[in-house]
Image (cartoon, rainbow, N blue to C red):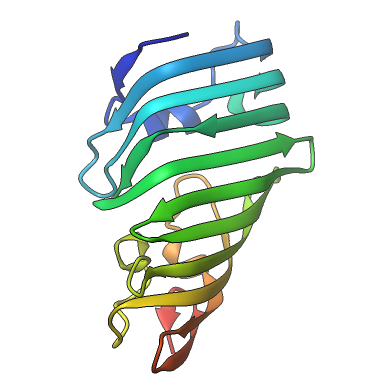
Length: 202
């Protein structure tokens, strides 16, 4: 698949979570490659765009028992440019492997301004979809997380940061009330630590 320019339908998340028809039990992809694609989501709540998106995958089980997902296999994606809810990132990259217990994100990285974001994550395959995320930033804008749900910090400039989060990506349920985590931020002159409980910074 190459040169695709595609705008996702606004209800694509609902379609992803919907039960598949009785005649479609599973979808398996033995090998997958893509090059130079453009993917756009215009959902005003969290728009994103991936430019020059490349990807590869193998032994992917993308539907099981009439439900979309990443149930097994390996997948890697990277793009030249991207924006996630109006925050620009360069060279975003993700690599993951999945089995019946969990999806393990072994690589998650992107350049932000002059700095680098790197992380790992897991998502459980149970209906509650438990999520854990560890994210490290080096020389990144101090409020790089603001457009993604973390409240604005009373700091300016670039920073080093460490974020640890847990939550639940349960279908048809809001994520924020399930989120607990901690954020540590260091600039040239200041340090700040914050804790989030049930989606609110305490």
